[in-house]
Length: 120
Ligand SMILES: [Zn+2]
Image (cartoon, rainbow, N blue to C red; front, side, top):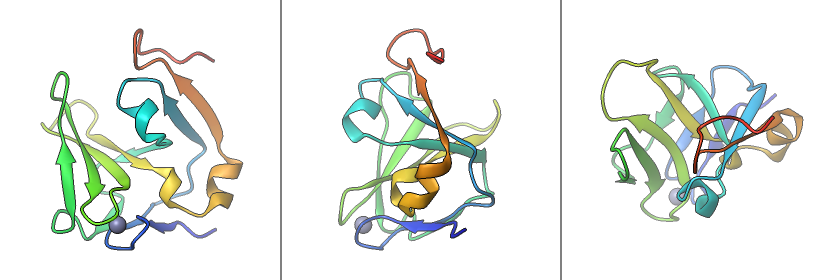
């Protein structure tokens, strides 16, 4: 299975270390607007090229994360923690990958707007 993806214009390239089994759809005020499907990996295991030279970041709320998007096409590519520690994982937007990859994962719905628990 092809584990490489990119933003729409190709300025940011992503490569997953392994196929995801689940993806998270979150209803928080940011995610519900971007429509991202998040898959999580240990920080540093996802190969990302074109970042940060071709990206912009957005930080909001409790300032735990930077959400990263392409400077040219505007697509959300991934998020990173602002500080080290606490799991050191990061999220990658599966929507930037081949549709076959998203078709086989189990999608979990996260109540990021309120309880931070999964609905399932
Ligand atoms: Zn782009």
